[in-house]
Image: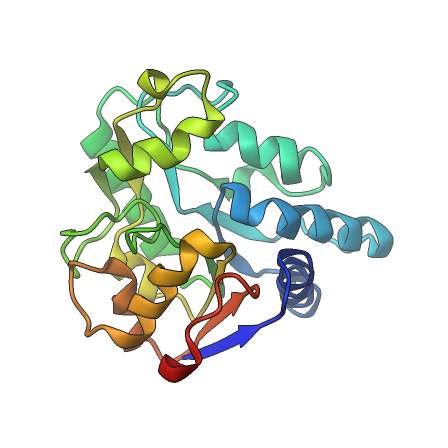
Length: 245
């Protein structure tokens, strides 16, 4: 596991965008695991700039998103379908829509949808690069503390802290969905390479815990210690304490 402080969110995001771009450029049939949220905004904006300047063919690239809220249709402005279209796929509209995969938060049977999505990853994977953010409580994807380390794609109940953290994207906290479909911890660590980004003072403790606490379901991110190829990029505010690094 490597942790690198690139000083600012802007620089770290651009660096990771370059890594995604290189992966797609060198391997046109790349499989990418994508994340959403404020942490990833600058990454995708920089990636779009690189794609437009170089006009590479992405028609054979396959993408798998980490998660989606339960109960939100794809057209909902706070769904991750909408987020990905708005920030990436509509900005560089040369991805093959048949190769873009995001859990269906508007499914009739969410448990069945989780199984379908897990089988899709298993059949088309492994993922070459999996992007991750990290929650203040150490969650990755929507795998909250207490999630089994053996979990695959599943329906999760969101904790109050996660609901509160995500409420800034909604008009009111009561509008935030209480469940999500998320890749499980085992689904995540099957990727060949994992890149985690963390920015801001609020993520500092989560990074310290990831680096210094033993592997435990109480801190889901610690499962990354079992993976041979993990890179963590932080800004100054989220950088771990020197005594622990």
